[in-house]
Amino acid sequence: NIAQAVIPTQDVLPYPDLLLTAKNAYKIFDGVAIETEERDGLYKFYKEELFYGIAEVKDGKAKIKTKLC
Image (cartoon, rainbow, N blue to C red):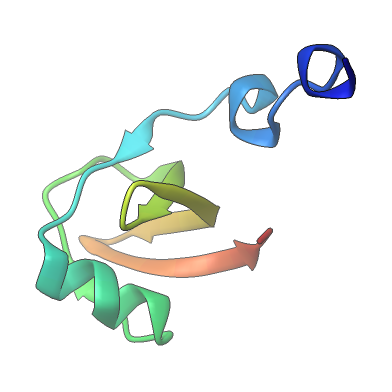
């Protein structure tokens, strides 16, 4: 079964999850930087519980860096 052999992308990325409210998830999905209290760095970003890509937090703002969906 191929589904058992394939490792999901989000499972191999060494970044923590970026947890957002639904409103902020849609903003960042559309490319809008949002305020966050997370530390600077890269995070896995999910939209509606589906892995979407990598977000970068810098100076208290999170923004999509790489879309992987």
